[in-house]
Image (cartoon, rainbow, N blue to C red; front, side, top):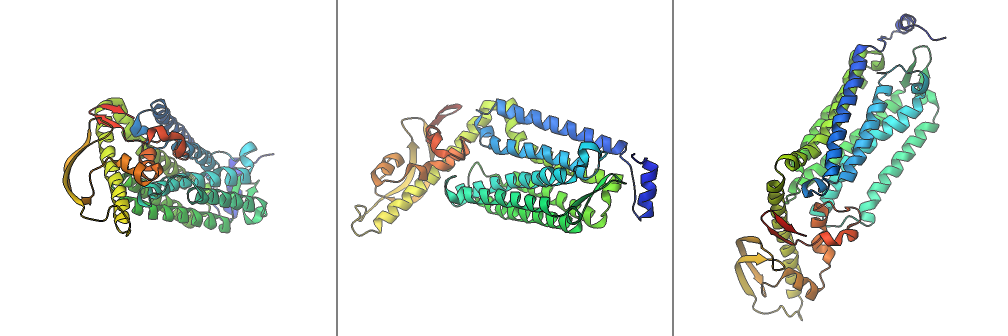
Length: 395
């Protein structure tokens, strides 16, 4: 026979604990979460419906959708772990909800943000493609470690992890698990912060430093609040104001993260489609053209240092260039600093003659267009720059 709220309060007070039953504020937080996640889902659905729009595609919708899925699980785990619902019936399976929903979702969402920054750094700063063990190794290693951590917590005794108190109908977390899990999430976001600092150096239209910094500030504020509440109010699930504050912070933070990623390109697609697309593509083509020429220049300079290189001798000097690609409209017309080239050959004919791999000059544009980021070889058709003429684009 279940106890009344008055009887539960008497038991809690006898043990020096507060007791606030699930009330209207808890219900308001749950309903607010449903509204927030529904609106964010509509934004995500709109972006998928317009996936062919290149600025949206560049945001990597598969990874963002992965993040949204774990956002939603995080919220469901939050309302159970923070006791915003009555922890009876199906909600009373503390380890199932606490480990395999709440913790797993929290770490997975954070990992989605981290690996977005990791990928940008790998492609633009380290100039490596999105394949191989150097790319997949850290991702696989993280999730294997996460599953191992969850399995360990699952098999450790309830008294040392999460135990269900039948009198108060509440899941109680041990201090070791509480502070250990908080420490691990801080480590993930500290590493994310390192990558946020690194991507500030990306000189490309795909530089996401500003939005990454906004997301990082939101996450740190949420983590500080979460850490303080857990340290100062160990019995916070029994305190209506504190548990609602924690759940509210979490749901607002993760939804804001999604909107920071997607709102601007979605707005441009809705109200300023062709003009913004033309501006975005032109900027991206200039960035990639400079990068391609720099790579070719590096190869030429390396060839010149070889004693038997045909590039030995008196190189020509180029002080300006008006460059066109594949007979299309000009990609770039601007003054260029004096460069020592043998001639101003087409970058692509130079690539073929000197055996520069296609992947060396294409994977950043390929990544930018958001075409199958994790299997670039399958999207070679999108790798060339093509030509750009105002709002017209040939790819």
